Image (cartoon, rainbow, N blue to C red; front, side):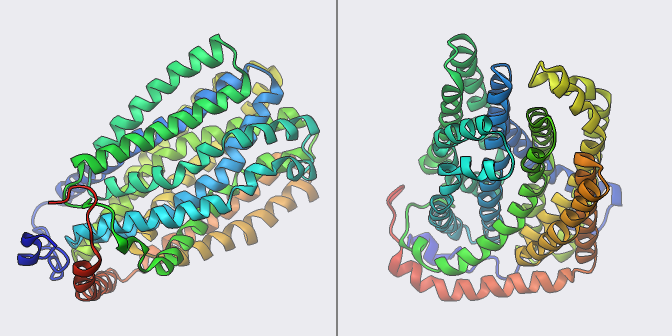
Length: 496
């Protein structure tokens, strides 16, 4: 331990909580101040998420002008396979938002770097366990009714996107580590630079040199690893002097407890992320499979693109709620929740209006096939309802992340989506013969149930008790870990 840490240990400071903000002032002023705090996190977070998601959108749009088979193949990989692993690992990384956010609020800065290193270990092990999804997608897709040509091409693309998948454990954890301490500008700058480089490389290699679908996949791999490198260099080379004090053996202490919290987070978000992507898989059972796959992939891509906005608010809500609970400010956590929901819903309404206004043009970004464009136009109304609900329930999920309710939210998601939404979709789609529209409508019904349950849970939350629980948790951690830090901590980067 450094001498100044012994005189004023960061592990113990903050146990009494931060002083609450003065309660004087109008409601509008308090809302304005809270909105500024949320946008300080959400703005750069939304930009960075949109930038990194646009990396795959750019590649997908180029592939769509090669052939319908190439578009279907890369769409299935990016929207279904990557969608599942992305959602699961992103959800696991959200445990870091809970722990780092609360640690930052309690001024236990030293623990943030250790939490991130634990997250690296846990997420990377899980990313390796998920590799069979990339190695054997073709036989699975054939069983779901996809044409053999699409299934085989998907298998080829999936193998070349394994490096993309393996970047997630580091990309997600570094991003959450930085945003928990409000260093979101660095994430935004790195993501913007990566998007610019990827756009140039895609234009040169995919559009001009016509390297094909494998070359397109490699450009995605390179872009995401460039992002990881940029965030890592910023973190270890002086960007986070208080929270990154070097590699520590403590990263391997308490991995099982960290895994349980991360697993709950992963299940919570992966069930949510995979839910609408199942539309692409079941499309293989309908007529005009190529057209259905392409149209639904485009809709899911647009939905995923828009989801980066409420996901930014999810991140901001998780950080703000965790910070306030860590500081012992229960009323501040509750107020941050309300402001974030209202803000996200307002932005979502604007996006819905844009989809309604330009629904005939959206598909042209990805394809020039008239049948696909026509089907996307028909599905636009379902897309609008999905986007609107998404803006509410993702922010409520952010409250769950900030408060550490991931296990509870995972059960809500499982019940709402797979015990209500999917059976209702099957009933409307197959038994009542409404096809894809019926399946999608049923799935929206599941999202409505989930949103209502999360609203009830959030409304009934005892915020004072949550704040007391967090304070007690960090009090125990501080008293137990001070001797461990003295014994086990060693610094590889930034040693005195």
